[in-house]
Length: 389
Ligand code: PLP
Picture 1: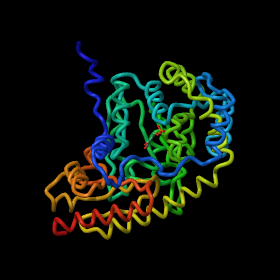
Picture 2: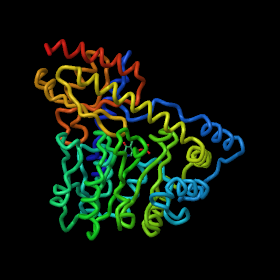
Picture 3: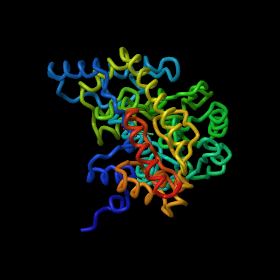
C-alpha cells in the first residue's frame, strides 16, 4: 500500500538532521535547537505541581481554560486588547496555532507568501494545508528585513495569506516600524490575511524596540496573531501557544483544533497564568542574558576569519555569513556544518535549511551559556585555522 503523497513528500528539517547526527557523538557543543537553556521560572513549576496534586487531570475547554485566556487578554490589553471569550485560542505550542490558522484561512491551491530565510516548519505547514508557497527572499544587506516592494510583486490573484515572523527565526531580524507601515499600506485593502508570528516579541535588544504589524489601522481585523510561552517563559516542553484574532476566525480555528490536539493539560494552562501575572521580572532577566550572549557571540563571530555577522536585533539566533569559509573549504553550508561537527563536535545548522537564500550561512543559536559559547568558538577558530584562514 502506498502512503499518502503528503507523508512521502514532507521533508524533515535541517535542524533535526543536525540534532540527530550530534546524538551519535560525545563531547558536543550544541548551537542547534532554538530552545532556552533556562529552566521554567519556579513559581510556574510550583503552580503546575499544585494543580496535578489537586487532581486537575481532565479535559479542558477546546479554546483553553478561561482563566488563562483572561490572563492572555490582560497581557495584551495595551496592544491587541482581545475579548478573552471569543478572540483567543490556546494551542499546542505556537506551532499548532500556525497550522490551524493556515487550515482556517487557505484552501488547497491558494498561495501563501513566505519571507525567507524562514523557520523550516512553515514549509511543512504550508504544504500540509495544500497551499502553494510564494517565496520572498530577504537579504543580509537589508538586515534580513523584507522589502515591501518585493512583497507587493509577489501578490497574485491566488494569494490568500502572508506569514510575517518578527523577530525572525533564523535571522533575528526585527521588521522596523517604517517597513511595518509600508506592509500595512499594501495589505490593508487586499483580501490577504496576515499570520503574524511574534513569538519572540519580548526578546529584542536594541533601542528602537519592536513594532507589531497589528499596531497599524485596520490590521488587527486581518491578522491572526501568534505567540506562546516556549521562548518567552522558557516553557518549550509545556507545549503552550496561543492565537488572537477575529471571533469568526478563532471559532473556526478552535473547531479544527478540536479534531487535532483537542485541548491542553489544565496544570500547564493554570501555571501559565502565574507566569503572565508574576514572572515578568524573570523574563526580563532572561532577556538581559540573551542580550549579553548576543554581544559576546557577535564579537566572537566577527573575530573569526571567514565568518561575519551584523548583530541581530531579536530572538536568539546568529545567522552567520560563512561564505568565505565555504569558499576556503570548498564545502556548501550543509557540508560545512557536518564537517565542523565531525571534526570539532560543534553543532550548528546550515543556512540552506531555511530556504535557498540561506546557502552560505550558518545558524548558531545563542540560547546557551557564555561558557559554551566561548568553548564552541575556541573549537570553531581552531577549525578555521586548519583551512589556512
Ligand atoms: N514560531 C517560530 C518562529 C519558532 O522559531 C518556533 C519554535 O522554534 C515556533 C513558532 C514554535 O514554538 P512552540 O514551541 O510554541 O510551538
